[in-house]
Image (cartoon, rainbow, N blue to C red):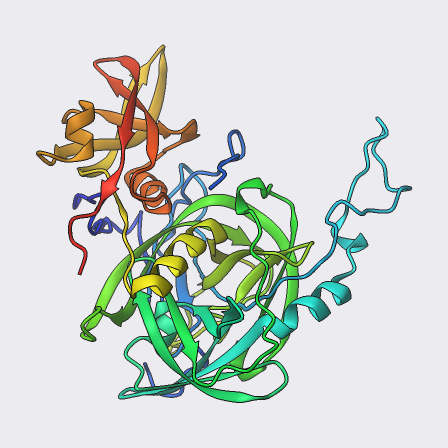
Length: 426
């Protein structure tokens, strides 16, 4: 088994039991192509069944998606959808819908999704791209009134021409301000941006709970303004995809993307990539990027099977703001090589991310992390595998302090580490 590294690029395990391949369904393609409050609600990685494949919903990009979780059947990657802010009180459920103890309960069926869609749709855009491999379409989210649009890096990739179509049909040429293939995010800028743009209102994905209702809005299969609803199926789901983009110098690059994703049942299909996942208040909680798919002979794209993944809004905000500021993004760095491992403590077996190598001078070395340490939690959230730790680290910002639970020589220790900037920028 290969050894994933927390940064710069973790290696996907190669055994069939832990990985599965996916075809990329990007923007309907023509040719082939910070609050963290989730303690106790974290889902582990999903054990990937080799029979499942996944698709990126963007133009002509192929993806490899991995999920790993102790004993769970494997989910696949997800497609994205656009979204914009909506102003609705998520707690405004009918008074008569109450629990036995008198607590007000809100059900997905009580939500006025028509009002949410009406509020959010003006901030959702369609993206048409033309490149050497052909043309395709994807989705995007209006980020500010200056004309910036956030989408997936795999939507724009190495596109030579990009056009953004607003919800009212107005079409604008756009340029790529910056893209970050390792997080699969990109920012576009409209040329001659009009007045009156309605940016998405960014919500707090840290307060999401499994079962919360959500809506995906985007441009699936070229059908702009499409909305679908579902629930948050899981949080902190480690998902690995293979995305394409360009370096700051403009060179094409294929990058492994590890996302600590939001899993949703909202239907997402090819062309939804780069769009948004919004909560019942119409606030952006994630940028959808990939879908799970069952393989079919001769198919390079697939449709929704009710398992989709979104990049959390907290991560989107950090990367988007950096790309707008200077066209590049920084990433957190721990400085360890990792593999899946297990240890016994107090008579119980624990799985986690086992340290196979500590880089000299890295944050991990400075904090006293040692070879063969088994990391089983970060900031109180379970870490059942190597890829889970990679996803958790990549969700955080450089300079952030984290607390690792480590099993060493049969004892459970807590180690505080201050993450640094990954040294491979550019």
